[in-house]
Image 1 (cartoon, one colour):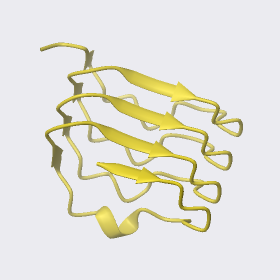
Image 2 (spheres, rainbow, N blue to C red):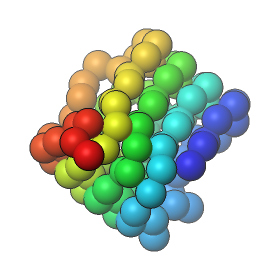
Image 3 (cartoon, rainbow, N blue to C red):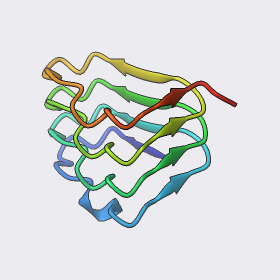
Length: 96
C-alpha cells in the first residue's frame, strides 16, 4: 500500500478499518502529515514498512497494533520525528 506525494494530506483516519497488509506499506512525501493515527487497526505487514520524507511527522502513533513486520522497517528523513512512540508493539522485524 502506498500513501505518497500528497502535500495537503493531514490524516490517515479514513484507513481505520485496515487490519492487514500482505505486502509493503510506504508512507512518503506527505509534507502536512503529522500523525499516523488511523492505522491503529493494523496488526501485520507482510513485507517492508517505509516511512520517508514526511517533514511534519512527530511520532509513530497509529502503529501500536503492529506486532510483526516481515521485511525491513525504514525511517528516513522525517525531520520532525522526535519519538518512536507507537512502535512499542513491534516484536519482530525481518522474520519470514
